[in-house]
Length: 99
Length: 99
Image 1: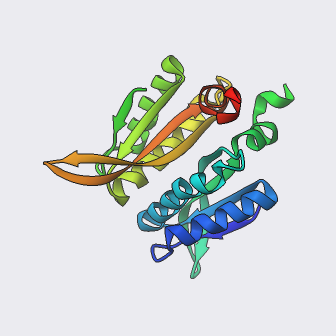
Image 2 (image 1 turned 90 degrees about the horizontal axis):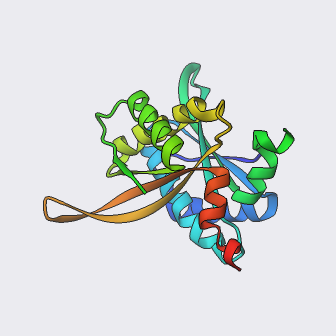
């Protein structure tokens, strides 16, 4: 899954455009952030991206998880947001799909 | 949909417990936050809550949207996170369901 790194300085509109583009081509995309400011930009971007792809019949949902990353040699806790069309995600990761 | 208000001071573990409880009883819950610090606590809570309900066959997903709220008479932009079991959400809000 392609991973976009978003920072406090990222523009939510620009990130939303990137999210919409990757979701349209790959069906899913991940955003990785470290810190509350970066997470704020990422969530705004997802809210905006939902509107971008809605007319294509894509219903974006987001699944957050913790992730460990190394920044300048130090371990930091990041948040990873997996963003998928609801339908795509369901078939791909829903545990009941294989039950 | 029941709405939980989360602030910077909220404990992600406590919010996660509340999210899991409401999702188990109602199938869905919303979290409303104003500001990056509060959003950070809310997203951590959702990541934790995913683990709480996973063994019950609930696959939590989150849909972010902007919302206008009034705080002390001033209009502020809040983020509203709708949290649902993936299956429940799909049947409830997917625009294609009624097409």
